[in-house]
Image (cartoon, rainbow, N blue to C red):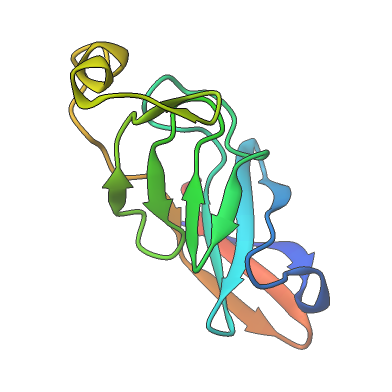
Length: 123
């Protein structure tokens, strides 16, 4: 694992997504309860970008299919419950998921030192 500097601490805000790259790995950063958290920038459902997703209370929601994830743990909180922000009934949700079971969002360990945010990525 390598430690890579990815942002200035002051640029990582509560409930705001900051798109960064750690080497070839696209990530999203936010701050939850004062801690910088990093996750994959791609939704595990179809690999669509999460960058335009809404973050509230440390949870990001995919703007395409409504899946939501904890920004620090990656835990799935909801799976395929909307289409482009419009809620859908439960039976439709099963069709939209295309047989994929709920998955977690990959997370990356972060540290902060001297006003900079670092992330550990494979490499």
